[in-house]
Image 1 (spheres, helix red, strand yellow):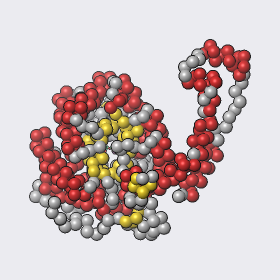
Image 2 (cartoon, rainbow, N blue to C red; image 1 turned 90 degrees about the horizontal axis):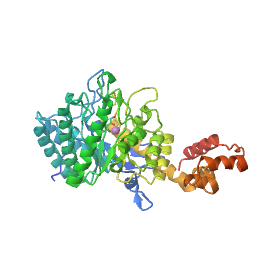
Image 3 (cartoon, rainbow, N blue to C red; image 1 turned 135 degrees about the vertical axis):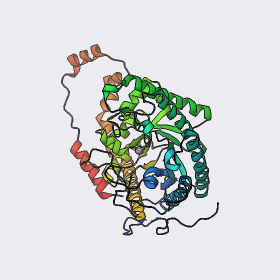
Length: 444
Ligand code: XUL
Ligand code: CO
């Protein structure tokens, strides 16, 4: 591939400078080349850049138009601009040292007047992406289809009351799966953007859920047909843009997937801000997914606790991320998943440097959390206390309960004849919170 002129000349590749550095354009904790347990930090953390926020976001909000102007956003037609934008995107991925990126079909290529034209546009851009991936070594963490922006999806995609829209969504996902496969995507994400309702007055909820399941089954069947081996991920979110979304949280999705016999084919892409919108801490969603052996990937961001919507901010909260990391590492990591920065610049953050600061902060926070979490797990203090807390189930009648060997009658007899009143045992919450604070304050 021919060498092109830098599109982001003001920033060079970000270097690791160490924790004491004052350079705002350097990593303090994320050293991509540092080897830990035989793997580099880049391999452990598998950071990914979200194409939609970082290369399609322009600072617009419901009250005002875009504020962010990038020099590559002009050209003779939409496809030409999309190609140049992609050059800038890969330059950024390389400079920020992110080994992965993720996209919706319509982020990377413009929608045409017909589906055939949209597919043609996508093919042109995908060919370019393939070259850029090869030239830079950056890989595709996941692909997905945008089934929520176009007005045709205003009443949902696979849960639309109009079968015509269902068919259109199916055709679009078919193509998105094909291009994800073509680009070696390691996962494919389903986020049900408008798969929910605005009012129950016009909604057949049961029928819509049946349709959603039928759609997922078609995706499973088609993956098999084309030999797509990537992991399917559902990204739960309780609301926004709809009043209620069917993929409310991990627990709801587990119930849904098991009801329709789909659970073997899916894991979760957990987004911090979606967890908090559902009324859960980030760590809760990770633990629910891990308990069902369905932890897949993370959409790394945070919300604003004062606001009730998805603000998609970069997360620099070491405590929240350390708690999450402990649960992720305890569950054996993310496998083919990664930490994808589904986060956007604030509207007044109009400089290209702001995009670097944002990602540097997010990457450093995750890297520090990763190191602290490893220390916590290596010392095993929390795990020991948890193991002790449940130890009465390791032997005797406790083990019989877990193994299904006793029922109400046997247990009643035991209490009446032998056990009597249980002794109160402390949950040690304050002690554990202090211990966690000590780990976080001491760092690594
Ligand atoms: C929306 C959101 C999406 C998904 C992919 O809240 O998180 O960008 O990550 O469709
Ligand atoms: Co997301």
